[in-house]
Image (cartoon, rainbow over all chains, first blue to last red; front, side, top):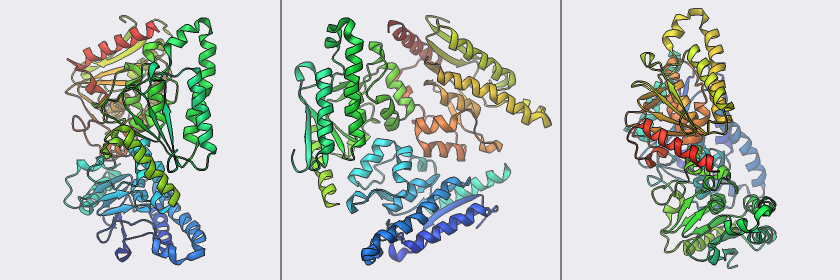
Length: 198
Length: 198
Length: 198
């Protein structure tokens, strides 16, 4: 934490920061700590490595074999709990996104209050391709950010979107970001500062 | 039907595919059949002739004389039932739209999951000009697709919108359509294929 | 009133049309009169002077000293009552906006059915900078007009937006306005006329 801004970093770059049960559990614990830490005025979320978040950890899901439905059901309680806290806690959550965010990764991106997007970032829903319905609030938040039909487009076609879609990230145009991480940190410090002066 | 895709075609080009009681009844029956046909994975809706749908069949409404309120009330049960089924049935509905869609025609366009739009397509609400409030879910879905104020703009001014309004149809830009019909069919086949592999 | 259009004019240019208790009370009374006047088919709202509305009257709030919470609480009953009536009354409310609209001023702008914007207009939320949460329905309506995330962006960053943000005011592009006031009046007359012919 610096200057009232908690910095959360997805730190499994070797697995493209994919969400597995341990990661979902950690995320939930971090969000709980943030909720009850009065020193935290704003939260900045970034990721290590070239991929922001590859979505669910399909390798670990496959390895679970018949145990997958139980693993998924349990993991989603933590994952949804973490995202729920992000939205219930009255502190701004800002993401700095570099590289790809797919499936649960795009869902997480959709749940932040603000997103600062790097040149390399790209997004895809990827759920229908894996034969599953979207989790992680993307169907809710994307519809509210970019409209119902564009959410349906992304959900049904699994298109990869980046610069050509300036609708997810219109917010980002306002910031002349050197890197997404720097911009997100800068933005958070400003938000935290304004929160303190209130 | 081909490859899991049901093809529905508005086929009264001599009346610009305007909605009359018989057409609304047919549409409702078709949607019911689609709902309960497990072979249907996705639905493609197109229209014959140069006009997609001119809205309510004002000529038939006029001919009904004093019987119009009863005719309209009865017809709307079928029409709204058809559109309700489109949205409750968990199968993607994709329209390929060429030419004009006005009034109830634009309402139908607003209710599809995805729309592939041809160069010739143009839209207008047209309700206020005829002295009636919008039916057919356009006030609901357009607000969710393009925002509340732009829906109000279209509803209050009856502006004809086409290419200059790239907000209704931003989805369409992704597809290099030869014709809207071909593109809608291609998209549906892809959706149906993905549904089967799930 | 002319031709079924009621013309409401914010008329405290010496205070940049800032909202104080007297102004909120007047606004509520005007909206009540409009609601029950069957001659009024549409409403046109403009402002005197170079600023549309500077928001709450901070000078008067400061002067209230310890009495501020009570003053604010009472004033907001009138202000929210006025905005509630604007939205419950089934008559179109159209604003012609020149110059800045900030805080409660932007909230008012967000609550109109249509907005005709002059070249000089610019918008800012300004609430977080003053240490208060948004009032006046902006958090509700802006999210519905421009999407949830862009509303959050404006709310959290207090950015001043104008031409570079063509999302609040996409509606306006349709009208080749000589001045915002003229355009709003013209639009209202058209709306009133269509209402009468219905």
